[in-house]
Image 1 (cartoon, rainbow, N blue to C red):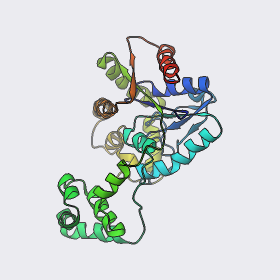
Image 2: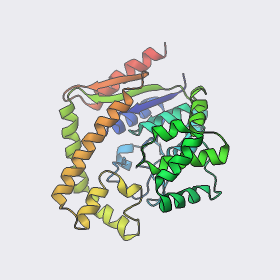
Image 3: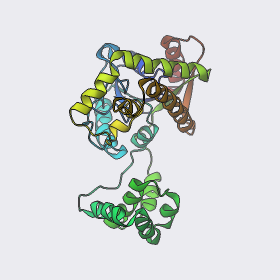
Image 4: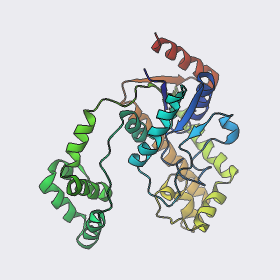
Length: 311
């Protein structure tokens, strides 16, 4: 078993506190696995741990991209895997913590992502889609990869173009590429944990309160600063929960009260989707938080499971 621990779970479930507690106990370093915490100057709305919360524990994969950049799971893995390898090479424990299940699964599997060359083919496909509609690309895709053409929804233009691009660049369908990837043994073999609340309503209450705290900490000023520096509303980062809703309020398209309620609702729905994603992983040890249980009690449960896994 690698000296790797994965800590997953929904937003506001206590992943940060547990990862830091485990890192201090196991001489570890934390590798963030959050698709929004990668962005610079987006600290409050993404709930990045503060220096005080980190308590001296090294953290990686925070603030590694500009807010206007398009980040991807492939880019995350290319940056994070060497960091994990370095932590292990130094004899320390790598603690991968976050709620972006797609990124975490891909990092652990060691996915060999299809290359993204700059040959101009993607731009040609995007132009064709703009001129003739995405259906033109779907028909092209259907001739070479009918499975992907049937699987991808017409509204998912980015993945449709990507699937066609991969075939044009490699001669392989993205379906074939994904099948080959799935047959490769996992790159890492961690102990998996995921946090959940015994009472879902408790989690939802914590999520609602977190949004209120973010506003108290200055979330609106953070968003105004991003807009002032020229980050477009259409940027992937600005489409995140907690940003797009308040951009609408700042632009006069809704009220602050409405935006707050929408962020809370969207965050609760996101938490539900996160739980659904992680429940598909048969290797996860679920750390169930009972009413009023503190991090120390959750840590004790994790400690027990780790001791058993070492036997």
